[in-house]
Length: 142
Image 1: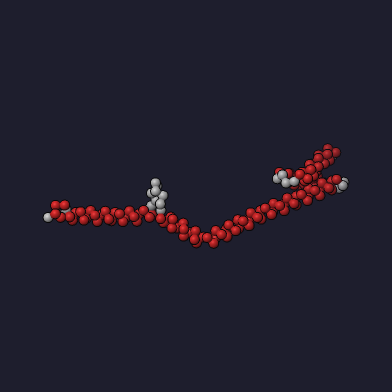
Image 2: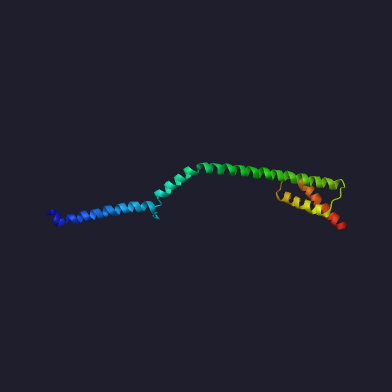
């Protein structure tokens, strides 16, 4: 009698519906992120899985990045030395009376500007200024 008065079958049906809705909510929560609560188990699992799979690739990329940085430093140092030699040789040639063409002056002045823009060396700065002064002096003669 008690079952009938409380609607025992109806209560069981409602409980069954609540269980089903709870199961659906749990399943959906693994696929849907709720804005205030940033928990997404699948995202977390995929991220961990991706890191595990790509760890070797990431290590190689890090190594290549380091090698590239080193190569850039070495290349810049080599360029600095090369410019220093060209500028110093050109200045010495001028000091010893070796004639240079206008195109040679223009080319070396471009190299001087590159060298000076990087603030690499004061001795070369003096040579670069000397070259520019000589160019101006010789231009006035023409």
